[in-house]
Length: 182
Image (cartoon, rainbow, N blue to C red; front, side, top):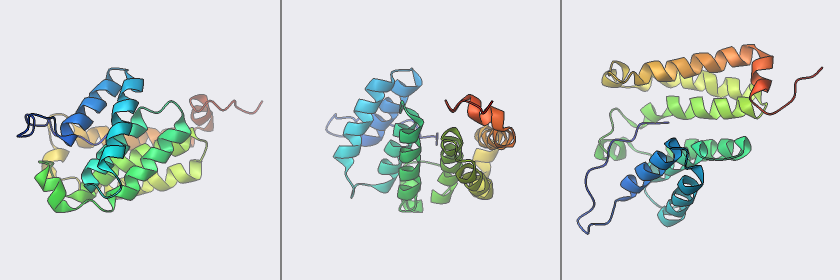
């Protein structure tokens, strides 16, 4: 999941901002409250709408992927997030207080799409996103590459594990729900 900066206080009206509500949805999902997270994030997706700010749309789609019950739905949201990412601007990323530029969002997005493709049994799609994710690693800004939280390490490790799973077909099938051939 792409890191979303901790939102500041509520808006001037006292109402939580969209990014605060997205963060709340992510928090619900991380605490295992996936149904509640899906409901909140789905409502936000509808509220933001197709013409809403691309970074908000990307953040909701990326978070919705993580709380789906079915891997095919997860993959659909991962691909929506990638599609919306093409509309996110560097200025929007900077205004949100996120490090780097819009291209720095791609390593995580491709990692998630690759893993979902693998879990759907689509190794070709998984390898494509593995390659795209690795290619995009250089877009991460230096401070993210060396931060104490190890964001770059986390993404690189995820890409390594994806590659290992793709190299071992039994491991790909083991967590995909697809029984291995006898």
